[in-house]
Image (tube, rainbow, N blue to C red; front, side, top):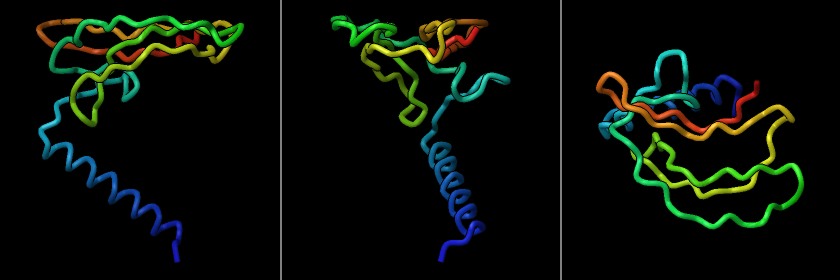
Length: 118
């Protein structure tokens, strides 16, 4: 029998175990204060060069091509290639902001790609 308390306890234990395994693996990734998991990370260094790819035909009106990019994978602690794709903006005013890497003050930062809602 699963009670709401038992479900929450189980989820909490799983999250704690995951966090401890990342610490034990020596994972170094730190979300920058105030930005969060989907935003900017302090990382080990720059991503590899962008891979060449072929842009395929649009699947229809309203789609935007998002070119392939390197993304930071927190779980494996390195960059992984994300192939280009067609996607629909979440609303008419949204625009895609590509992932971005920069070196600031001797530290490496990576900001994930996202839809800008302004």
